[in-house]
Image 1 (cartoon, one colour):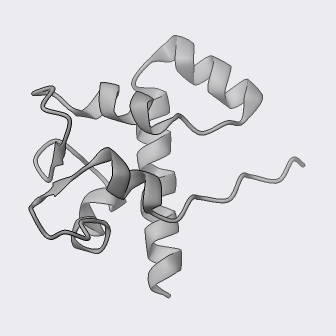
Image 2 (cartoon, helix red, strand yellow):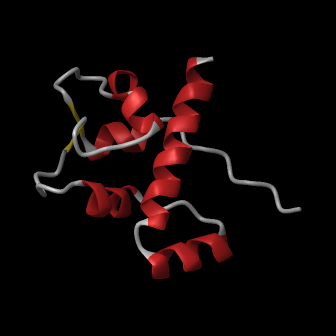
Amino acid sequence: MKTKAILLSITATTLFAISSNAQQSSNRQNKQEPPTVDEIFKQMDKDEDGKLSKKEIKGPLKDDFTKIDTDEDGFLSKEEVENAPKPKGRKSQ
């Protein structure tokens, strides 16, 4: 169950990051590829310190922050986001 919650939070974060940039959104939706961790950080890391604080993120990722913050330092590093379970791609209809 925890894995499903983490997958949902990563999916929501991915969708948020995609919708933040209209051009990227269009490209990503056509390709149905999630953004890279670097793209997520570029969109969300407002103070550009290389870490995501709970204040910088929104949605389900924020809800699962403590599960993803494995070193319990109060920030999400790129490594922690990379190691979080990845969302499954949507099946074409």
